[in-house]
Image 1 (tube, rainbow, N blue to C red):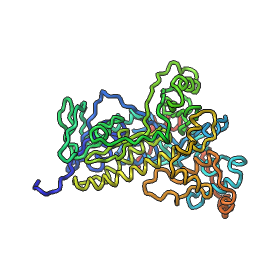
Image 2: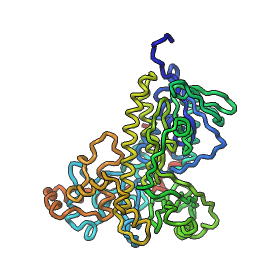
Image 3: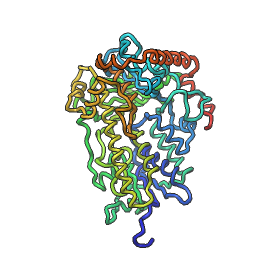
Image 4: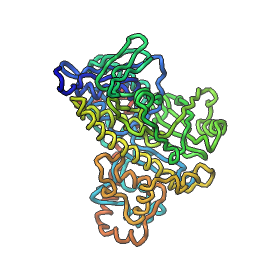
Length: 519
């Protein structure tokens, strides 16, 4: 290449495997691999254990797997996956036995053209009416009855209701590994990185493996987990601690077998508030994943283990528990020089609302879509990526905090401290003030990089008992006939789906014998 010519990007090296590494490899290879395309290498030490904290996805995973070229039937079989239609939050508002609400994955009827929230509140707001999500959409009904979001005759990745997955994260990594290597031409190197070589301009020139020596590339993707070997350790990008907002810093996790082969598989994530945090409960095909996340500043491990044992019930003493340390936060920037971090190397927040895997998907998809062809173009892509990704992290942090600040629980310092105004981001505080006068709507979220739609904020707000100002409410109930029709459509849809949809367990059982229809 002659002097003065731009340096082309011809190779990508992904450091680290697991879900983050192999999702990134798959998305880049599906778009840029093959003859005449980029050389894509993934180097990892197979002796290092995979953390595998992510067992819940967003609906985006359906699009990601399609892009990579994996059949939904094969994915569900390989990953012991089940269908997820949202999250049930139990005990978050008051801790009473009947205290729960849903954050489903379908929009309220007619939203955003018709906003049913003011009409629901005007009719009693849960005191005299069904819960908000049950009144405005049919998915809470499906979840409460363990019903699936699709039929065995549905096309792959399509359903009657919007859905995501619960999955075994370790098995997902294994499936993606085999597909990327066998079908997409990704080179896999099993090695331990012992050094990182830099160029004069500060770029990473190569990672040095103990057995393979220098592995060079034009772009490096850091998927090395919490250690952040490349972006954090080598390039020195600081870590932004966000534990002043999100207090969770520990998780105690167990895998719980079903009592029998016909046990129901819940069609949603169950998040049950405890005195010092909350417990996730995720139903896969052959087991449940259960974990207590908490703040070690507020409670000791012994007390947490007692509460987790009480939740799981008989047989807990025979289960192997695993403690996971959580450092809530993210890197100051995510792409520096010729290195971009994806997954835990970029950061991690608590597992509430399953944001970990979707941030991997969005980051990897952007890298694949905006892949620069020259080193000079990479700096422009990096600046845009950093702006977009920081925006996304900030929005996720605010949305997670929303769940805590609306709680009325007084049973521990953990819940009281979460309502301390000093721990609430300014933007979230401003939004809460505005939402006293108008429901969350598209006008509140104008970026193309929003993480949660306005409807998601409505589900949490009104599930937690948030109320609009009475005068503002009166000004927003101007279409009573349209609102009545919307509520009636939801009721009819529940009746129809109750008669036609299989249970989660029944559909997954059929899928062991049959396949979904190819697209």
